[in-house]
Image (cartoon, rainbow, N blue to C red; front, side):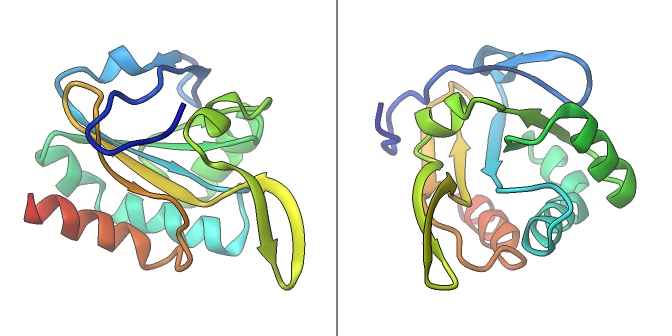
Length: 155
C-alpha cells in the first residue's frame, strides 16, 4: 500500500515501550506523528528523538501524539527511553511489517554503500488516520522535528 497524502494510513498492531499493543484506531481523534528511525542510541536517531522529546508538551497541547518506530527490541527501547528521558512510546517492529507498509523499509545508501534497512521517514496523520503529510526520506535528523512542528503550526 502506498503512503499517499489524503488517503487512509495503513493499520498496524505493534507492542510499545509502555507494554501495550498499539493500533491505528487508538489514536482516533488525535493527530499522530509516526517517525521511523534505524536504531536506538545512534547519533542521528538520538538527535531526532530528543528533538521530538523537547517539543512533546507543545505537541500534546495541540492534540498531537508521537510514536517512534524501529526494529529494536522493547528492552532496547526501554534503555533508550531511560537514557534520554523520552516522554513518548516507541514501537518495536522486529519483522519490519509496519515499516514496509509505511514505505520506511527498503534500499538506502549510506557512505556510498547500498543496503536494505529502515529509511528514516515521518508520516503525519489527521484525527481520522488519514495521511496529512509524508516525509519519505529525512536527511537531517536533528532538524527534522522542527520541520514537522513548523508544518503543524502552519495548518
